[in-house]
Length: 320
Ligand code: MTE
Image (cartoon, rainbow, N blue to C red; front, side):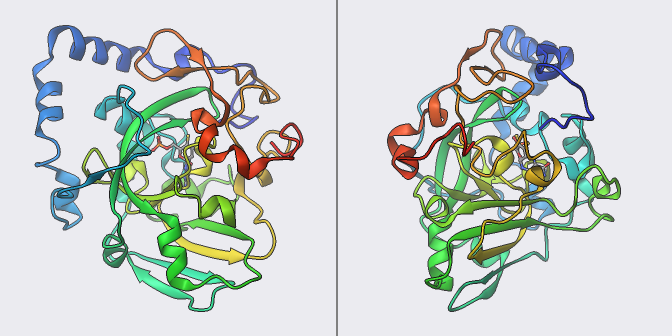
């Protein structure tokens, strides 16, 4: 995610793949660098963060999802070391370095607002919601890079069903934990904390929309939004809010963090759209992390067949 104060102009390749991770990747690919290989092969049976979190080391017998892409996956290393999680710093390596201060147990998620049966769910109860599946999704960041990640998650619709949304519920607001002691980035005034995101109720109930609790067959590393985060694969990555503590059904559209910070740059819908540029850079192409060359960005991040109907008749230049 980029904010105006950070810099102006297009995202540069050097900001997308720094020299160090490029070199590391070449080491892995070309010389089968023993330690990197070892780390990759150990997954998912040995997982320090799973142990740290007091969880079983892996999710067993995950069903593959028909929504999964067959594209080549981003390496585990890149997926867990090149992150956006401003609560732990603004550089891509900061979350991996700093997120150890996050405590993911005990953890609850309040599901409230326009609901007949509002409730507070314990995270371990949420881990049992089915179908819990592996979903290999593309995630396209607004900064023009993308990854392909095997998430472990369940449909958000399954959780919403349990609280019985009322007839007034039209939108869903999501909120990240607010605790500057655990999340040192929240001591800065860079954003209006806590991080808030929102979806229309039909987007939230769409079968592609999941709450992720893991990746690569294991529980979510803290830098990836442990213990539970949203994944909406046809929208820019900033919609996929991490470390959620509250989900609220509302009648009015929620005011999201990035709309508050820069309303001209970040709209409510944030659908991936190569034809609508960010005011400061083109969205026509993207760099898949791990690739050298850019590739064209696809409308709705390639999920148009499943989601385009949600926006029929809408001017997507206006509702960006
Ligand atoms: N959620 C919170 N709470 N804080 C953040 O800074 N960054 C967003 C999104 N969710 C962010 C967040 C952005 S800009 C992106 S691209 C994705 O997380 C990145 O997810 P990843 O780092 O796990 O790939």
